[in-house]
Amino acid sequence: MMRLEPAQLLYVARELDGHPLALEVIAPQLPISPAILNDKRHDIATDLIDPSRISTRGWRLLEVLSLVDGPLNGEDLSEVLDLDASDYSATVSEATEYALVHLGASGSLVLHPLLRDYFLRSYRKSANYKEQTNRLASLLYQRLNDLDPTEDRYVEALLSTVKVLGLAGRLDEARGLRQGLIGTLFQTGKELFQERRWAEALAYLEEAITGDEEVDLQARQLIMKSLASLERMSEARALGDALVAANPRSPSVLRDRGRVEQIDRKWAESISWYERAIPLRQNNAQLYADIAQVKIRMEDWDGAAAAAKTAIDKGGDTPFALSIYSQALEAQGEFHEAQTMMARAVKREPTNPRYRHRLGRIALQLGNRQLALQEFQHSVEIDPTFVDSWMSLASVHVDMGETESAEIALKRVRALPGAPSAVLFNVSAKLALASDDLHSAQASIDEALKSRRDAQNLALAVRVIVARGEAGLLPVGQARAQVRLLAKELMAMDELSMIVELSQRSPQYFD
Image 1 (cartoon, rainbow, N blue to C red):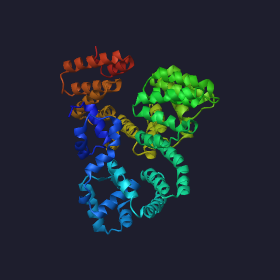
Image 2 (cartoon, one colour; image 1 turned 90 degrees about the vertical axis):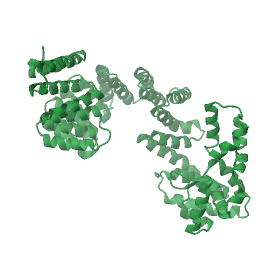
Image 3 (cartoon, rainbow, N blue to C red; image 1 turned 180 degrees about the vertical axis):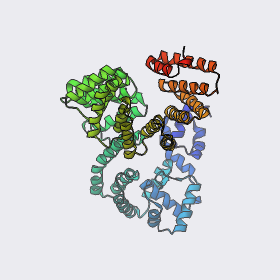
Image 4 (cartoon, one colour; image 1 turned 180 degrees about the horizontal axis):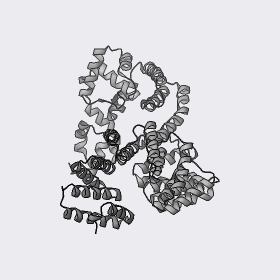
């Protein structure tokens, strides 16, 4: 046998669905062309199966599975095969032992793909083929009606039911289900996309494609954005360019093409696509909001504020646009106006924890800690898993000297997934510093700086070093040297005001 490259071996393994014995059977014939390999699938299956070693009931089970392709549970299969529980269990064990079936993700038995065609041919030769197929079709139809369309098993069951109804000659019922199939697949895919479950969404959306370009447009747009979100950028761009070529004056297509670039952090390119869509859309306020969002990512606060205000002035005063405008105003130091815009967003969408959180952050900028606490508390009451507000609660409680309340909030943070380590260790260091636990404060701020050397962490590190120097845990000369190094980093970040504030607190540690 000629030695094959790894890529060639991987291709053969995929074509044989990873069946280990099948690989052994075909190995002496390698290399082999894809077309011949596909033709040989049935022959390979024949070589794998010894009819004399499989019981009659096992053979019947495999024939049924070749038709229904998995969606029936053990009780259903036992009923179809007229087997009691012990016989059914023994039959499944036999099929599993020979690597003929496996347990699927939904918990149902699945025949190995390589063997499906082999046993389906056998099934069609049975004397009661039509009667059995009709019985299976009725059972599948009944089980489908018992499922909620949002369940993971629904699409698999629907596809199998349509197929078996057609094979049973019940074409009207099959067509009726098929008509609702595309819409169900699309809606499910759309919901999964909105839940950011992109890989699952992609599977549903691809099944929803009909071949009609006009009908498929929305599904293909979602497929494009799903591919981008899965970092399959070349595929996303290729599909996007094809959609633009076919729909050059569709603002929706142009906007989604821009979204692909935004996902890939290609800010200028995404703005270019949004700007192309603006003259083609009568109500283009949302496109200006999109541009404002990208400008914020670029930290172009003037551009973000201008685009967001344009969106609002054009009637697009959505909570999203108001929030973006508020964020840009906050970055420009316009805290009162930022608070006004954020309050409008909260009024329009009072159950959005993120909006409540941002209103709290602006209140802190204005020195209103009580209002900040109130908004952060509202945020975690709406969503008890909203980590950012729990961390802000802990931080504000520390600043107010309420260490017990801070510890309670910080405990909640530690119990939740997704807490940014830099912020978590920053707040932990603040709490330890307030509690005069300088050893823990130093350990926590060191960890915070490992995650992110930003101005907040550097400033807190200065405070911890000063406290250790004052407590005699660090020679004052060494503390001053460390403070000077951190101050240089802050200066490089143009954080002069922060350096001045720190030096006023502890002038003896600054030159």
